[in-house]
Length: 148
Image 1 (tube, rainbow, N blue to C red):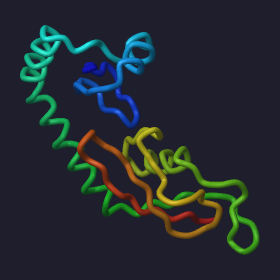
Image 2 (tube, one colour; image 1 turned 30 degrees about the horizontal axis):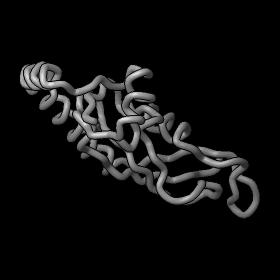
Image 3 (tube, rainbow, N blue to C red; image 1 turned 45 degrees about the horizontal axis):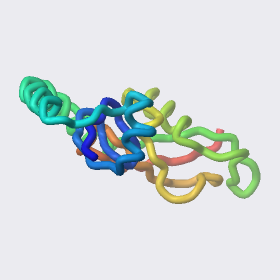
């Protein structure tokens, strides 16, 4: 079954994409949750016309995301955390703290678009995270966890 996504769906696709899913998943989850509509011929034609009209705006958004990605790749971000003996952190550092640090540094990034690479961060040191700025643009950001 082909559906047109109305919202971004993790591990499936982004808004305004036409994807193929199993019939039950489409009928019983995506459509009732208003995440998708069935991609009939008329829906596909309307979608193609809408995307043609939006192409200039989408190209501009992609250019802006590429510019932010270039700046983020070079940025040095420090995330503060309470550190005990031996450099261990009380608790762990999550994407929420990283999003706050990025926002303080002047980068508008939602926490949902940040994915920490590796296991949980429970010690001071240097780490990497992946930030998805656009459906086609993902950048790796290096950051350092320092004690407060």
